[in-house]
Length: 119
Image (cartoon, rainbow, N blue to C red; front, side, top):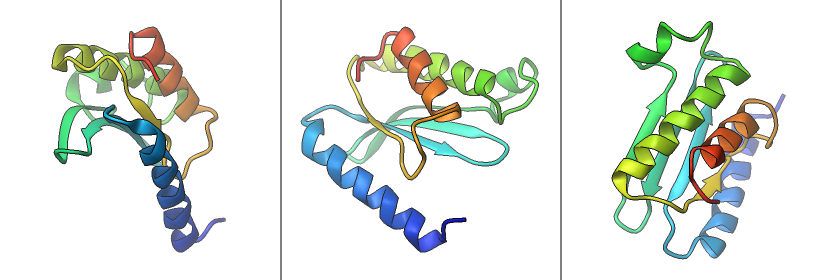
């Protein structure tokens, strides 16, 4: 199991690489806990969150079996893509944080792409 310190170092390393290639694009940040998944679109230049979605929202909780599976992550990916379109965001850079691009993180990214976000 990775220590908290090594997890934070990995996340900072990924974020540093993202800043090099991001340009003016906002960042789609993913946080994955053991029971839920969260996604935010962040404008780093202004320091504002443009759109957010999570499995804790009331309208989603009734429809999902659990917040910690691939189906829930895909639903959050679709929802964040819809909210990004309303906010006028079409292109983002994907920030997976310290998580491997596999399982729930990949499902969220794939659903966001299908919803119209370009990475």
